[in-house]
Amino acid sequence: MRCLNCLTVVADNDTTCPSCRAPISPAKSAQSAERPRPVFALIFMVMGSGIYNVYYPAASSAAKTGGGIDFQRCLYAGCVGAVCAVFGGLIDHFLNAGRK
Ligand SMILES: [Zn+2]
Image (cartoon, rainbow, N blue to C red; front, top):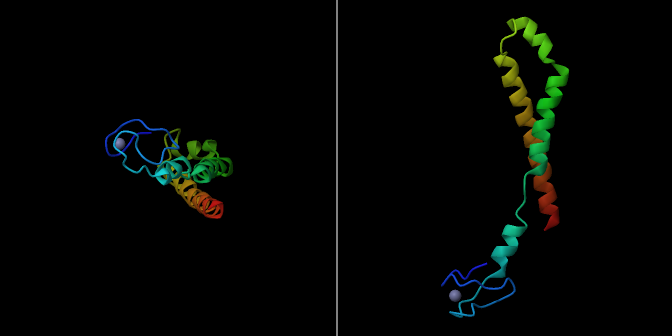
């Protein structure tokens, strides 16, 4: 990491810059290291779209549209994925809240 004042490279456990003596806040680097990632939101979004495809197979809509793209089906799959992503995001939120 670097000193924000003079951009000298400093050790992670330094509290002050060896060059300009400016205080280095370790809180900032710890925060970026533990930044929550929306893992469950992504997993749920993919699972939601996948489950939608299982319940409404592409074959059934392909017959309906003559082999073309069923945009309504794509929209529904996207909506199901989005709703699932919101649930996954809530799980992420509560997991990250409990970690603090
Ligand atoms: Zn410095």
